[in-house]
Length: 88
Image (tube, rainbow, N blue to C red; front, side, top):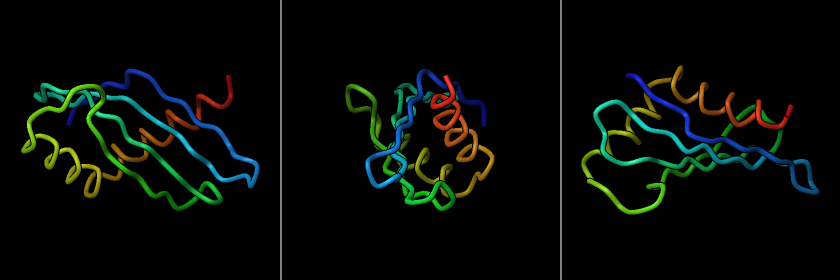
């Protein structure tokens, strides 16, 4: 599925844990989403998905969450975008 990254950021806290956010859109979805990423070492990632801004269509949100679970390329691209923001 096509997606577009709007903005991304990542930082490390005092314990060197990673915390990042990526705002993105999915093809055919009306809303923007924000994924919050967390990892203790930068290898295994926990995430939380939310609407970016106003709430949207619940069915689209559930589909987006399902995509993140099943589409490793999409998830990895979002993680990479957040990690890349640390380099600038």
